[in-house]
Amino acid sequence: MIYPCVQLQHAGPEGNSKLTGYPLKAASAIPGECGRETPEAISKEELYRLIECYGDAAVRAKKAGADAVEVHCAHGYLVSTFISSRTNKRVDEFGGSFENRMRLIRLIVENIRKKAGNGLAIICRINGTDDVEGGQTPQDAAAVASYLEKECGVDAIHVSRAVHLHDECMWAPSVIHGGFSADFATEVKRAVSIPVITVGRYTEPQFAELMVAEGRADLVAFGRQSIADPEMPNKAKEGKLDMMNPCIGCLQGCVPNMYHGEPITCLVNPLVGRESELTKAETSKNIMVIGGGPGGLYAAYICAYRGHHVTLYEQKDILGGNMRLAAYPPGKGDITNMIRSYIAKCEAYGVTFVMNTEVTPAMVQEKNPDAVIVATGSTPLVLPIPGINDTGVIHAGDLLDGKAHVGKKVLIVGGGMVGCEVADFLAELGHDVSVIELRDQLGPDVIPKHRKYLMKDFAQYHVQGVTGAKVAQFYPDGVSYTLADGTEGRLEGFDNVVLAMGYRNHDTISEEIRKIVADTYVIGDAVKARKAMDATAEALHAALNI
Image (cartoon, rainbow, N blue to C red; front, side):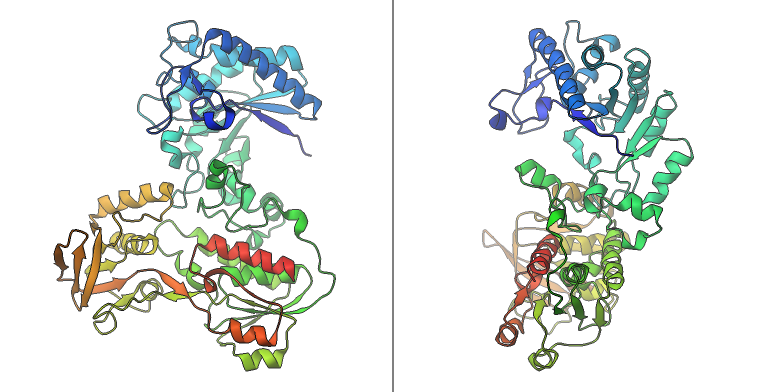
């Protein structure tokens, strides 16, 4: 059964006045974070009008077929700013005591009940913790939940977490373990008799099922996991977990697009929001896919799903490309699940894999496919710097792949995402690691939520960084460099130097293939070394156009 529920939310200090044309409002004039505009303390007149608006919205939801509404009282949004004493500094009847701080939500619930009747269930989404000093604690959350049940008569509690000041605890990046907020839901569950919903990176069903089986929660909500794979519950029920797209916590296509006002997409599931475009092909064709990285695998799967005959050629003896190696640094293991799920889908829909094979134009001529997708990926960027080729430099990918080994003291040349994650990987194992980077900070291309945890690791493991430094020459035990002001320096005494200066596209064949097969596509890093999200998006585009 499906029971539609509409969420009622006022963003408060986390809104966008440029978008709405109205000033931000909150319980008190406290900005959400540095750089955001200071909200106005909402007047009592506005509050009572707003309470009526919540009731009216609930009525509209009911008329539209909703069985429930969820009043958002979390994440530092408007209602949350009243509940938390950290953001509520009012001295009228809406501030001060616990009961006064709960007055707004109580009046909202009463107004909804009066206008929509008892036939519409009311859920309240609250913070299990604000994750900031002076904010709502798990103990406060239990008291709030109890009040909402006994004094307001709500039908269920949805336990979320964090304010946007620490939104890495709200939409957790890959390094955060699944079900990381479970204990907060358990604390609330002990305080109420109504159903409790838990949420928070439940990327696999095992622990989610355990939460319900142990009585620690009554329902489990899947947010980003539902974007990555809306069929996850059905696949779990049918025992097809190998086919499940896992949310890898990359935060590349969901949260950023939401903030930018763009349609949400997903690295592992670029089809999200475009499901109606996935139709069977009118004519079954023979498709050659060259390259078994994420782009090649996803393109092969979609082509096969559409009814084409697909053969994927991989030069190496293992699939996954550079994305497979991206799973090695701390907290990135879900990437392995992603690669495996793509392989499983390819197998399920009849893709033929040809391994240890480098495709040549002559081979394409012989096989005579109807269409070709070139997904040959990228190779390490090796700049023409003295000593780079003859001093024993180790490539980051070879290190992660176990093909090269390093001593105790290691210098990473390149402090972008790859270099920093390799540094984290080595530092966790006990190596003494330093990183040198041309730009003025380490990890400038790392998603901010990921970077917070990365920098915490750097501090914990005492990873040293030299930024704003252009490497002038490589030596067996280090490098020399020049700073922007002309100052010269040298880093030396290292057992090994690891090169992580980025990647460049690797495409030596598409031009010749186009002379043989007109319907040829080049996707992902083979076009230009970028994010994996670009590879899967282009894979989908190619597969849908064949």
